[in-house]
Length: 126
Image 1 (spheres, rainbow, N blue to C red):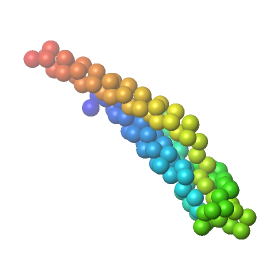
Image 2 (image 1 turned 60 degrees about the horizontal axis):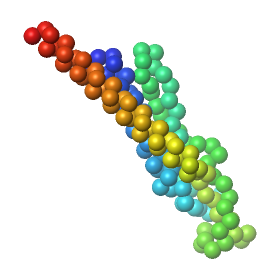
Image 3 (image 1 turned 135 degrees about the horizontal axis):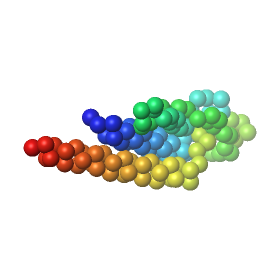
């Protein structure tokens, strides 16, 4: 595998993890739990550059992870009517999903270009 292809593959993996974390946050944005209980923990992705190019990524739990929401009709609410809800901003999640989608598309274009370049070199040798 060429260095360019390895960098592109790391970009694909990073974009996939970012999209997966954001999709999980979006799907669980309305989950609630009793105050003090451990409910859904919103996910974030930390990426760092590799010395030879490309990135490495890791999913992490975001802090603060939850906030109190007033919902006296919930069976999980405390006597004051509060439940614990994950602190998730839907606009931020949509932006993250769009950015991850674009990053995936660009990494895929680089991977295709690297494959085409390698094929051209093979054709020249034969």
